[in-house]
Image (cartoon, rainbow, N blue to C red):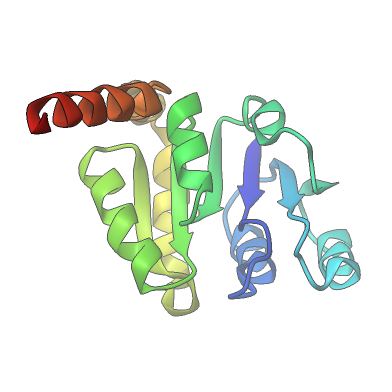
Amino acid sequence: TVVVSMGGGDPGRLTPKVVSLLNDCEGIYNIILILGPGYKSPAEIEEICLQSKHTIEIVHNPQSMGEHFIHGDFAVTSGGVTKFETAFLGIPSIVLCQNDYEYSVAEIFEKNKTLINLGVGEQIDAEEFKNAFNLLVNSVDLRKEMFQNGIQCIDGIGKKRIVERVKKYIELSE
């Protein structure tokens, strides 16, 4: 199962592109497609999904993203907040960024081997997407490595560390 989420609003309209790219990949997959609350064209994407060779379950504005991500072998996501969620859950991901800022942050995640960063979505090469997709489909070892790296990178206690550092800074300032 592959989970697809291009963020809460998908401002770059990457969702139709991803569904099309997935149709060009070899094999037939179960896909969970998550549409956020700001997605502007749900009827259009529903029609595109009906024409897909894959079995696509569309989830509109879920209360819990994690509830859906845990059912996937890996994810195809946008480069915003979702990459933090997938890393925390240990979900290997292919990331298509909505803009240059997302790309710069996704580069850090890629260096930590939690995801494959394909760059800004509107510029993605179909062959590059297929190669990344096939790599994750065919390499259980890579998915395991990305799982481990993700949960080590985003451990869920960052807020606690920040509070501790602020307290130390205040103590040093006094």
